[in-house]
Image 1 (cartoon, rainbow, N blue to C red):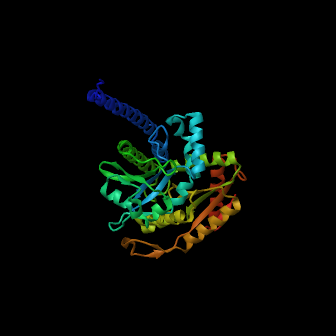
Image 2: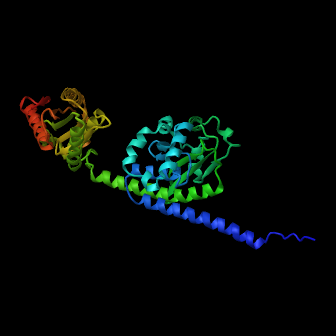
Image 3: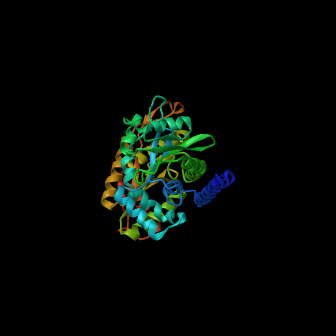
Length: 400
């Protein structure tokens, strides 16, 4: 006669508890490492890169792909800022093989030098970067819904067909995904979309729970980095014109000359001075002088390219750092600016009888390394050229 013993329920409960405890310890270790990583920088791009690396790394949350959206408050929409993930199944296999061979730690994956190159190489971001997700109340987008509700949205395979007409999901090509809001002070400041397209690993409740804990840290990290960038921008910005100020100009010109020298590229500096501005201030008042300064600043910003730097040099003087620009190209840009200023009608305030008038600028130009080898020499030659323009009749562009 044999006696069959039932499994001891106490032993089973202890085993389940040990499994949960092991998972909790692993999750805490991951969150601790992620928290340490986010404290290493206040640079917003690096913070976003750290967040997405933590979402996708094998030592982090382990999702296959992640896209991070930030809020454009002016246009009231979500804009994709950064993405990490393989381009294809073949690319995914290569990444996993590398991880298997090298076994990199999370801190190896988020080194600062990886940020720029990896961002630029992301074909996933190129696929979706033109999309702007409206946050209007009538937008049926699941991303807009997650933003307004402030809660994670897990779209399972049996529900994905409900969003077959969504522009983002058509490009993202997911069959299951999670949309995770990032919050600070109870306000959503971003979203992460993540999936497992290549492994087809189902997204579990444990995955969502850990993702939510990461999101709490990520939202605060983005808030802190954004505030830091705002303060930094304000400290480098001229209060009247909202152009870069003189201190920023000096620092940035040093950096750009260093880059131009290292890569054997030209760099052109323009220095502009408003003609007869002292007489204008004496006649029309400093308030109207500020109006002219602001309007000319807008012309300079509109005339500058993405990688140029329009600055207020001091008083009625401005400077523009034209990166990767030859002297010939700089002359064309300078002449275009001179013509725009000369043709612009400035509307003065009521205390100047609401008069409309025109002003002109004199522009000096110097090019590294054709005209100068150092920052000081470049500035001196552009300044000298500007005075040549002044003494040659004003309202013109000159070189030394």
